[in-house]
Image (cartoon, rainbow, N blue to C red; front, side):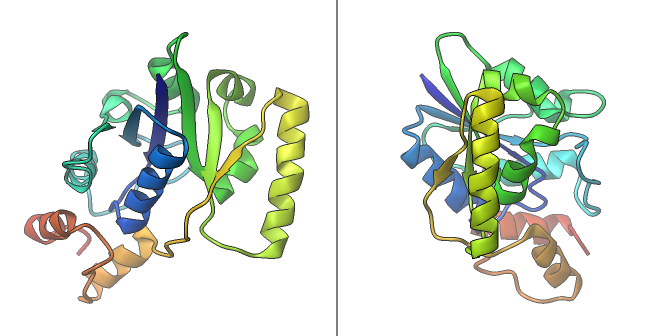
Amino acid sequence: MRVGIYGGTFSPIHNGHVAAALAFMEQMWLDLLFVVPTGQSPHKQMSNGATASDRLNMCRLAFEGHEGIIVSDTEIKRNGKSYTVDTLREFYREDDRLFMLCGTDMMLSLDSWYQPQEIFRLCYPVYIRREDDEETKKRLIEKNAEYKKKYGKIVTRINAPAVVISSEEIRKKIKEGQSIHGLVPEKVEEYIYKQGLYL
């Protein structure tokens, strides 16, 4: 089986995340895609205004009805810092091919993550771009050459139109009383207002 992992804080999950997940599933011919909201991320401080349970619920609402996409609480249930390599070990199966989706910034820093050699052994990293500047493109090519030399694998690019939305921007809009309609799935929008998140 071809299995995908898409992790993130998802606070809140937005239409850009959903578009990236669907493009990942389609272009990597995935049989299953696990969306994994982070527990205690070692890379960033958790955003105020939403509990782990809220982020999990929002992800479930965002992917409701999408066949083959499963929202997993594996990192949220794990105590302590949540490292990518631990999550990959949980999902790794000898007979399956495991793919992991990341953004441009993550792709460029993969070799600084905890146990990068093991990450490349366990999965095939895939990235999606949110921007389209020449300088970043050059850095991505150079980094891929490094990864090929160090780990024997390159990071595949997903071709999808960039959806320029950020969770930070959405939280700011909510705090300022601006509309977020069209930025997040409708059921997620309803949940945010019903629970009074990010105010």
